[in-house]
Length: 114
Image (cartoon, rainbow, N blue to C red):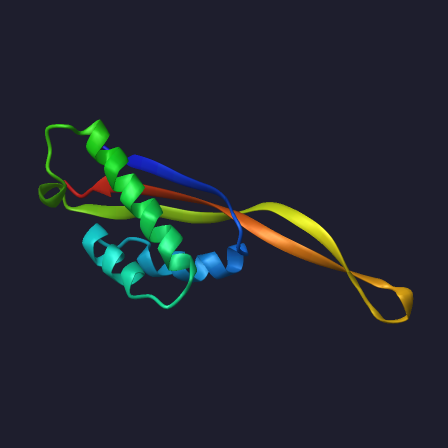
């Protein structure tokens, strides 16, 4: 039985988040946690907390089972674009440049191999 965890409106660009998410797709949960813990990317901390939340959600659904015996793995992880905050920055000769502060939504699905 699978469990889902979602992270909404995390203030970083989806492209940067996908770099970290691609590393843990299809990997066992223990290995994914190690990858995220020792990653130098700042998005790895948010994904580590999200993965731990997905594991806790799986435990809530399957109360009688142990996480170590279930052989959990990251079944699906995807990053979608969130809201974009549009700001203006002064430019030369009285003009203005648009600054787009991007955010993203991350969905992670954890499932057991058995």
